Length: 224
Image 1 (spheres, rainbow, N blue to C red):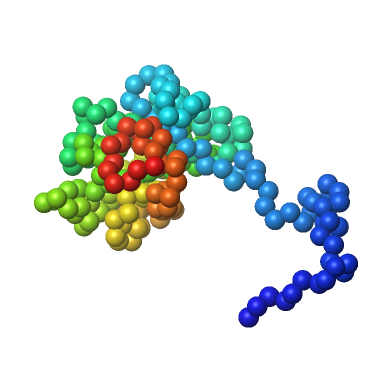
Image 2: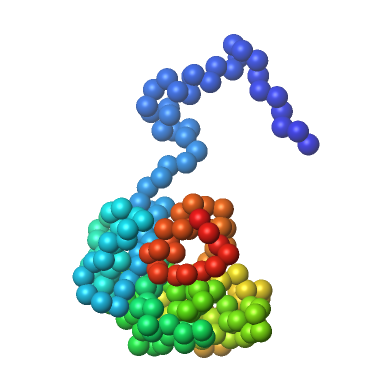
């Protein structure tokens, strides 16, 4: 069913709704405030801030810096922070073994941020690509991504993040069935309040290339 036609001029004068600040504020559809934002940051395993060459003004942060950033987010009214890891290439392997390490940089950052500003929500990326030498989100078996074997690793990673205090798990891996597997695992492990927010539309954006640079991922087949 088509919408009703607009009234003809002069019954309809759109300028009526633009003539003063008060009416523009009253009828506007969308207002962007800090409450609409998620602060994305990359945490590294060393000390201090490390500038990201492809993202002027953006730096990788240490765990201590992340804790201070959480306090700043609270002050600014930003409700949530999404953190991503930058892992030393020498510590990566083909299986992404560090992804579920309870002593890794991500759980340490989550705990530090929650201690510093418990009111700020923390979101963690669930994917293997920052931890693999080949840069793929999934485990490779005989030249192909092994979907189901990867899900097992993602579930282990997500449970570790939930145990560390993450409020939202954010799978970016694009494996079939991983949302249901994560939800079931969270419920069984006593984390019914941990949320899941999947995002998978990243390939259409030129922002993805600098992101790969920021986390040090050599992910293949997904250029900017």
